[in-house]
Image (cartoon, rainbow over all chains, first blue to last red; front, side, top):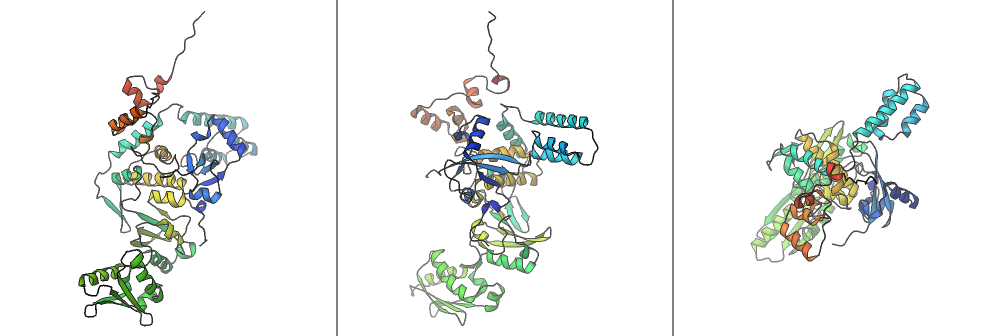
Length: 83
Length: 387
């Protein structure tokens, strides 16, 4: 067993990629949205830790969709609010 | 098929699945350029027609589509069905559990897949199961209460230990430590005779029989092998490989066990999935659990509705319940929240906070008696004067 578990290899975890600045701008202008309108993901999410994304990054998630076969989704990395 | 056809399909504005289907359908057919263009055009047209219209109230359709068949489900809480002698909650109680995003399901269970070299060998699969199943000390030997000397004598059975692949030295080290740490019982001393596979436990208060028996209870039930939360493991052969089903769930610790396939092993505890594998895995877990609960009851709900619910629950980066502590309680509109549950509290809080209701949703507009902003209500006509 590996020392650190790579959650991205799990069948239930889709592929996570950090998007570049340009890609993010393109995405926002395509849907005419701002970053707050994206779904969120916490900075200490296991998948975020693996790819090493920082707060404020946008992550592209390539899901194996039940209906379309392949679907892209986006999440904004935010800090986990304190309880 | 001509390469330019392939390219045309690849570049078309269609979902991947449709592209693949179209490709495999046209694979061995001889078609002209003209025919191909018509086919592709019609497929794209058909796809555009099946897409949901903008401004369509998908939420309420999803609610109805899951809710109506839900009324047909069995409502008995004690309705269990055994998958390999493991009991799992099914039906409406399970569905409610998923939607409520409970921290702990009433019957947590795991499906543990094994790595290739373990998966087709029953004995090796059994070995892995021993590393996982919580085994109390009394399974490894005899425990006798010696009332005369006020002590508890544990005589370990080396054959059992060998069979279960655990060293006597490990047991004698783990048992006293776990009684202190996990069971929080500290009023005792112990002596170890490793060669004779013996252990002695003495209560600190040597006058009280009650303490002696209490200690005996702790000694008997202390978990010395396996993972504490996993009470039972069943090994089953399914489609050519051995799979472990468990009662109780602890994804993190199971992943540490040798021989466990960390890419396929899953739990029915959604919040645990979220913690160990992340929010996207939790979303998948919700879809999988809800769908299999419904299908098990013979209810066929389109996966799109469940996907929408799962998406809503996982929007904010953590799993939120559908209810006043989750999605319904975080709606923008005061009137909409008040219409759901605890009306007075919401109205009072909104008044204190000087909240404004934009009246953009459905509920608010029904309450104030305006047309809702959906369907025909969404269209606004602006008349330009002729002159």
